[in-house]
Length: 578
Image (cartoon, rainbow, N blue to C red; front, side):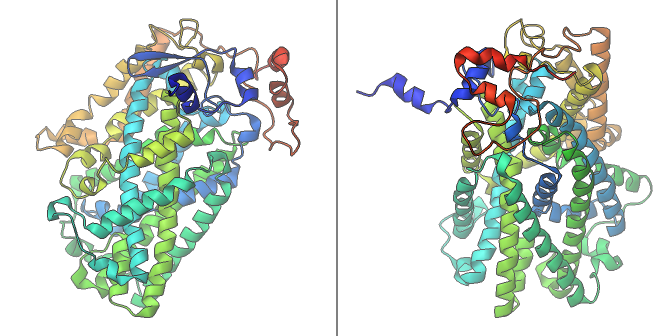
């Protein structure tokens, strides 16, 4: 007879003995919607990272943002800007300003993780309260499921192009699906194959991403620049979109006057909104920084540079394709462009398509694993620490891509993707509250032990686990944006002023909720402001270093943690930084 308790024990997240000894003194209570579930163990992926797991230096962040910056969504970003009635020059100005603001926002949201070595879920416990923190966490998980599915679909399309360069018959496979499904048999096969190929890559823990990121960024950067120079050389220029025929080719009227101004404002805000989820949970990756400064300069330079170059190269390649393949329409997606190049070329074209598709495929693995699957895994590991760690959560997020039916999401047959695209309406206010709370309310002082204690003894328990200031500030930030958001996803008509407020979505929501949260916290200060732990009970602070090859670690805090249970007090002699 199967022993139920034994089976459940096997399903629990494996716990390392030395870590369990250090964490034993801190009681953890997981939060699942409105049900509080007692849990006697801490998850090693949730606690403040020890020095030997903080391995990301400046070049790691360069690789990360290069790997995630060169992607299909960024490549096609110019299409949405030109559709607003902007010229190519105006669109690129919008991209420059938008990406500079994105870099600034990422640095702000990265400070918490880089300085305290915990991520987005723990930050929300401080801002929202131990129980209310499930709300932003579930919002982020929903986005992870959605974007993991859609990016996996794009990855499947790139994989189809790659396989098509070897086996052209794939484009003529039997289609078992009706036309209404918006896909054929080869689309579905390549989508599933992309998910299967992703699974072994999820086994790599985030602290070991340095080499994969550098490899991905190198191959992706070389490929997009090769396509860029090939396009310029073939057309002896940048094509008709750059040459002043953009409005005629795109099929929209040039925006002028006030309409032009609001189109620029909306374009800048949409640049930030397109990566709002990444901005929100940036601390999940900056917590791996070897020192707090490692993430600052890298993000300040690489985020805008890669965002600008990817969009520019996408516009130029599409422009040149419009000149050489006028009957194919505007080929914004790189996999569509490559398939047309193969169709109209010879054996040499097939070889070029193979290598270009391979590079874009590697890039899609990079952005989907790091930006979506692992992010979802981190959030799920915080909801269910006893049963899910980052790796298990990443597997679950990836497998959820199938029931999400991304072929329907990207086909335009549903408003769901429009809702997700406009989700900055809800995430920007959350981001503003978190930043203002950490920077101005608490002056960057955090009591780490209270983030893992769901009782009134925690300074982040507030009123029955809810910081009442947070929902009030969040609603204040969402309210002025919601009518415009509703118009963008439905046929509801609202005054033009409400639409213009929505055009300011990310910066306005961020500022309103942040200022309201700050004001409420100044008028009614929460308990525990300025408190930090007297001792480094998690063995978190110290010089980052890799563990030695011997069984005995070199770091004194780490060494204390691995001693016997009787020596646990040795861990507590390490004072916290001021």
